[in-house]
Length: 142
Image (tube, rainbow, N blue to C red; front, side):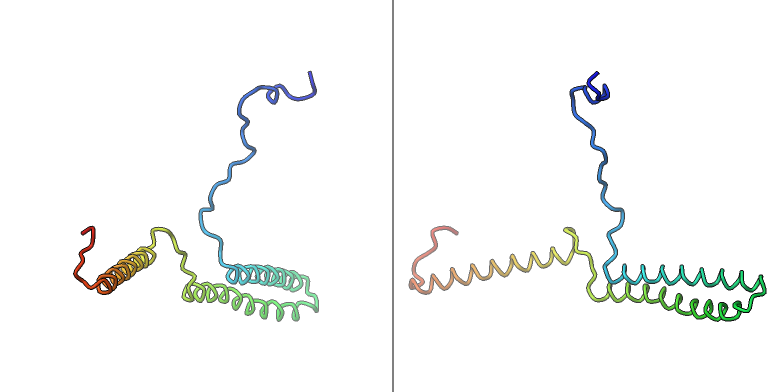
């Protein structure tokens, strides 16, 4: 009875506290994430304004009219903020936000072009070597 639970005294492998799993979707790019956070905050404030305007209207307060105006203005700003998220995402994708993966076609094509360029350079060097030697000698290998 050393003060530790019995299952900790047992020899053997310990299970980790948690197992990390890969994210289902990649993280949003920073500009898009910033626009999304901004939009969420603006929509939340607009909803608070709308609820406040409704409650003040039901209570018959003189503050109801200014609050309704603020709620309408907030709705316009919130719509703009949500559209900003959409536009920022579209711009990011069009400006090269393409996620490159190992099985990407473009990467394979670049690799093939590089290989062909290297082979062409090697052939040109071998031909230049042959010309310098007088061209009468043959290569030691085909």
